[in-house]
Length: 115
Image 1 (cartoon, rainbow, N blue to C red):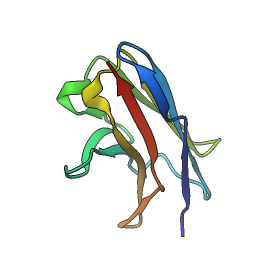
Image 2: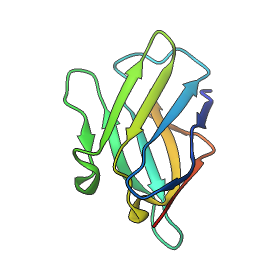
Image 3: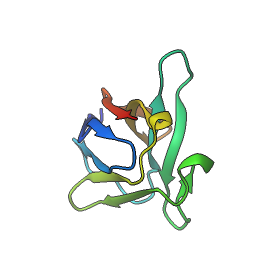
Image 4: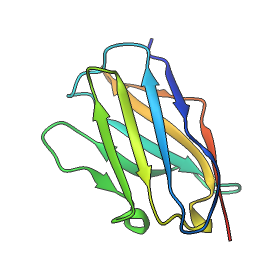
């Protein structure tokens, strides 16, 4: 059982920055895909960024060039650096990891971007 705990959300003005962090309870190997998803009110959960061993990170088109995903396997952490935030980025952000074919999710952290 892997537990994920996100932190770093909050309220920010449009154009500002936030860094989300996700701490895993168990050792996460570089072969385990990790990512960030988000869900806005009334919308489906969507992939924001994903990092997988041996591949370039994947990003949702609308965040390309503004968001950067990174991971530190030794610290069991994954991060999402978010720059030039827009009101459309407002959502609950969830950390995700897949281990042995099982999907694990964090509890989510709220990001609100005000114009």
